Length: 283
Image 1 (cartoon, rainbow, N blue to C red):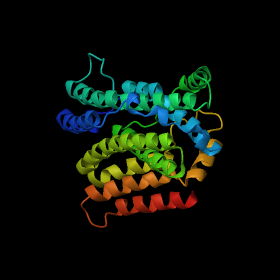
Image 2 (image 1 turned 60 degrees about the vertical axis):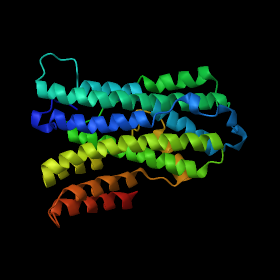
Image 3 (image 1 turned 90 degrees about the vertical axis):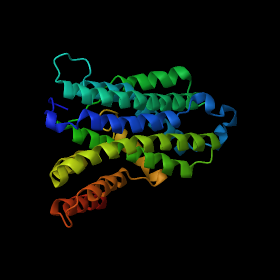
Image 4 (image 1 turned 180 degrees about the horizontal axis):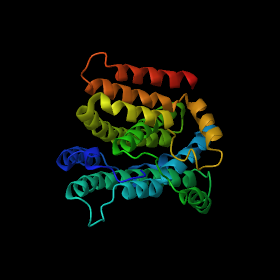
């Protein structure tokens, strides 16, 4: 986010409060720890080289949580005495979600890091060193309007959920299958929050919201795509092995818009669907 959003770019803080309350409550009800996992059930001999490659790849993505969190805390600051009260109220509510979300993602990173060590994929020192090399790189989104940042994250969470589900279908190592199921469920919760949040904007703004959402889809890149050396080749190999395509997540935006824009045959809504289909055909 390159500029401070206008107040009318933000939802009322009370509306945001209700959305966050729902998400945080669900997070508490569905929380888990590394101690809940049966580490004695590991069967590393059942891992394929593709499995190992995919685990290393997703560990990088999950471990970048300090970069993701830093970006959103800078974009939606909660330590600024000069802020309008309504802006602070919105940011403060979003902060509550970010804390819960960061806890989930940090747990994902910790579980995957330990998995690499426990299965002999690398030593703890090796894993931590390679993660630090990527983790110190900055993460940023180019969008000025909050709803665009939230739409980006909606797509990213849905894409990650879909990947974990597809990856889980291909593995025979039982511990990894169980872990991927837990990760997918967490990402589904995150997606649900952002879907409700973006939905509230679309319900408020109607078809006027569509061009901004379309811009996000047109410029979308998964996290680390522009900072990790060899990202595209590695990600394509992993995607091919699991029959995964992140552009499937764009369908969630189309369904959301169709659900909230009431005008039948609204041209911008139909155009959004056609736009997504065109991108997916190129893939």
